[in-house]
Image (cartoon, rainbow, N blue to C red; front, side, top):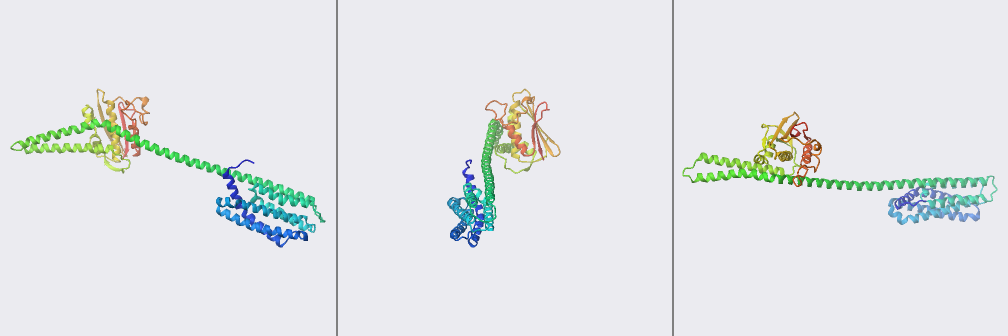
Length: 455
């Protein structure tokens, strides 16, 4: 017999105890009847018969008690009372063997009693086969004691009846073999069932562990993505730092000159109010410009992933974005070609769309800053349900061999330390999160990136 795992053995033992309840009820009834209606009536057998029936009756009641207790308590109770339960079954089996043996051996028994005894033996073996099959040793002991031993006594008994006792003995032995075979098959099928259940539980545990690992890996990937996006944003901010200094330095110079002019006007005996007013208005407009730059920088630097979708004027998005790069383009003699003022409205997260526009504008600037002809054009088209934003530069386009790679994360054509390779990948993700598209127009003569966004 192959070695079974502890889990399978425990399940079989518990199932054995649970199935024992019905058999215990049957044995209690049989022993009770045999107490009232003995099958061995000879004086020399009567006392032994009643003693065996009484002990068997008490054992069957006790067996029923333990079977119920173990069924309710499960493994914990089974470990405590399981061996006692099995021992009680052995005692009851021995008592039943004594009763059947006396029934066959008693010379005063008629053919009818022999027949009834045979029927009892067959019925008990058949009825107990399933309940005892899960304990092969007890099952074998039961069939030997209740079938083989009484059958042998029947074969050598001295009866004067007309039954062919030899043939009847062969019938009993044949039935024992039949029941034993069925018990073995039942035991093997139950073992296969519990082994399958154990394997499924192991696979379930492995699958649960794999899911946990997958979730952990997914969380780690999300964290890495967040860190990568943050690094890309810091890199973009670093690239912008010099431009921002120029963006703010120029209006600060205007404010300084206006302040000096106002001081000179204050020294005059007669204040030139129109000129003073003009100077103050220049300071106000310049201050508003600095505020717009700071507002645009703050917008770009923060994470807008959790912002709600809201209606935003497209012109405001463009103006806020240009406030962060206009002066850089001007200082590098880049011709910035702007679209006519538009009244189109986008339903979007404005922070994310500004980040995408600024990333495309910075990419265009880096691509053309060394070219003799430097220009960047922003075009806007209303395509019905879709708004198209196109950013084109004076470059000659992206080589065909790398067009399929430019949106791949960490792919960059910039020198080491000057690019993370995440800008276009993140930008495409932000646009797709708005149910839009970001793609390269490969049919355009220059380098032209197109954004399609639903209104």
